[in-house]
Amino acid sequence: MILYQEVLFWPVFVIATLAAMIASQAMISATFSCIKQAMALGCFPRIKIIHTSKKVMGQIYIPVMNWFLMIMCIIIVATFRSTNDIANAYGIAEVGVMMVSTALVTLVMLLIWQTNLYLVLCFPIFFGAMEFIYLTAVMSKLLEGGWLPLAFSSLFLCIMYTWNYGSVLKYQSEMRGKISLDFILDLGSTLGTVRVPGIGLVYNELVQGIPSIFGHLLITLPAMHSTIVFVCIKYVPVPYVPLEERFLFRRVGQKDYHMFRCVARYGYKDVRKEDHGSFEHLLVESLEKFLRREAQELALEVSTMEAERDDVSEVSEIVPSSPATAAEDLHTPLLSDQRPGDDSRMLGMEGSVPLPPSSSMSAEEDPSLEYELAALRDAMASGFTYLLAHGDVRARKQSFFTKKFIINYFYAFLRRNCRGGTATLKMPHSNIMRVGMTYMV
View 1 (cartoon, rainbow, N blue to C red):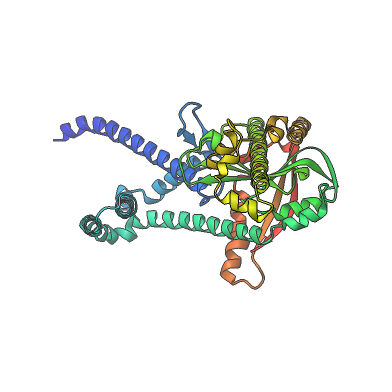
View 2 (view 1 turned 30 degrees about the horizontal axis):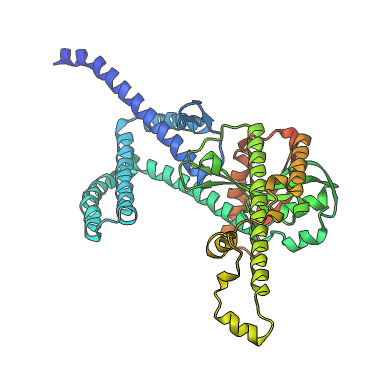
């Protein structure tokens, strides 16, 4: 018997080692994927993510989490020194995963698949009963190593809740402090300062409205760029966003203000492989397409209004000037007043309105469009400047102690130690301008 044990020891040891390596790789990959998607949904602080493949989209590496897993594995093994406690911790974690999976599948059956309500209730009752038996069995080992996964889950839950809570309060503070468009219009096209060549990219989190950082910039800077673009990067809850649908533009103010709002949309599986040069190039290309489309829509609207005015004037020409002629016209069809062979007016009354030759100036021949495109190219040739807010989030004095502790200490600690926005957006440091702000939440 001892001989068999000595013979089988090393093969079993090799197989167990390989199984542990496979399990560790699965755990590392799952950790990287969960952290990346949590960051994309705004539920985890920004940390560095390295995309290891130029062809495969999902291959990522997170150095901080990899070091964290390695250090914690060493600490746990050195602390427990027994496979029994580690097995107890693994059992509670496995049963917890099973129960969470059952709850999520139940929600999918109810909301997405829209399964019959009785079948939906049978699923959690059947599987949940078995998992509850397993849970009661492993909870008896809570003090013998089972507390470990509960401690880790509680820690990450606190981090994610604090980050999401602080980010939501900061966004609400920006919404309350946004600048009125009437105030910008009162300043005039010069914005109350000097407009210099160049494109200023004002990064903020507002989808609509003018952020308060812009008012601080107007007060702080002696000059402002000739073209201002308020850039807002949003991660939408879809896997991928097509490149042609990446940027959404809207004009801010009148044409001579040269101010635009841009919403850059990314899916939670999209990879921002472009550097700062290609991102700005794509942004300007999309802005040019927006200007051309806007000019075409304006030309079509003007042509339609002129065509409607022509129809009204033609109808007024056939109104009788005396009662006698009016009585005669009551028995005369309206179409008899048209010239033979003139079908354009019939098409205008029955179908789509044709564009009059006198006002059929295309968008490409619009002088205002050509001037705006030329100004945009000149501004692009002068370079880009990234205008950012160096914000400090603080709780109000009348807030409760719990909120002050979470915002002023815990959330502030996460903001100071997470990856900065300049590194995430891949901005050149030589073109960055910051303005200090304090958000009272």
